[in-house]
Image 1: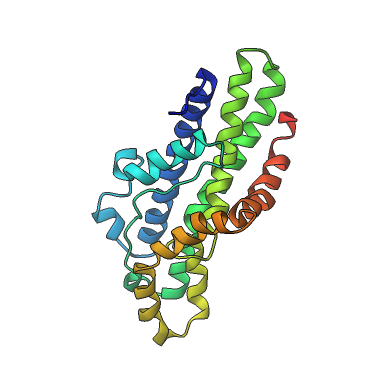
Image 2 (image 1 turned 135 degrees about the vertical axis):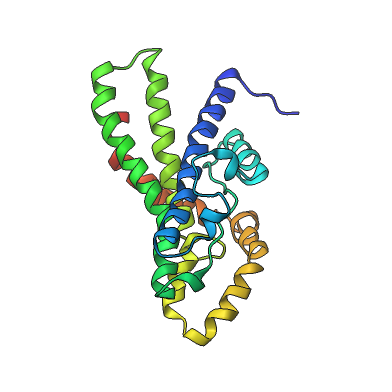
Length: 224
């Protein structure tokens, strides 16, 4: 059985505490935009809430991020998808795109706000044994939000990026596309978890480093 140091456990807890609000706001944003576009499905299901219990998936929101954090990998996961019905949208394709992008956009906004606060706070308080943990929290919160944003922008069902495919599909193909999405989760797991075992590198890791990693460096110059 692997053993972990107190510092590793603290870092894992910090990452989990940063991940939960990031994913909760992400899911709320989907439901909020869908509701603004005329779809009351999420509101009726009680998902227009910042209560984590409304959105948490035991495996995707808790166990998976903890395992990834303890393994030293990028922390990502998922919450219970916010339900929506595209038939309520006046413009179905536009509604799909706006609803799909709302989640990643919320993560980008949170990362930028946290980066602006940290830019002024961290140089002001300096770095010592106590304040370094404040910097760690800022770093993880920003990075986890960027990871969630770029991870969800992958055009693979059931990720948000798959909504970007909808505008390019003919109207008659949409019912088939929605059926494919219902059974796409196994394909998603193969791409994300099995391919890295077969290939000599992780395609997901390379993608996240090129996107979230590079943007992270731009947003946290104070972190060195």
